[in-house]
Length: 73
Image (cartoon, rainbow, N blue to C red):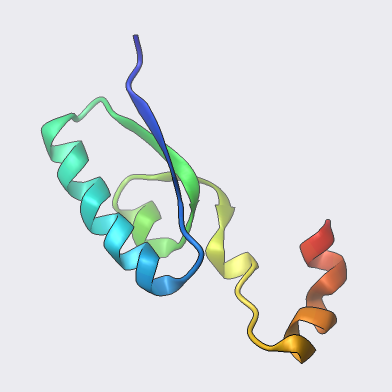
């Protein structure tokens, strides 16, 4: 049976913490597959991202409205 986990974070601080956890998990279990939504730190730690946090990083109502079509897609 394959070992895999899903990790999903919503901001850069969580990306940093998740990356540290992923690194430790992969040291203990090198065959572990990690997939999820995160940022560049998670990806560098060995996670396969299906959604990159940087693509959804908007702050404030003006930014949300400006990027709404892309976010809804």
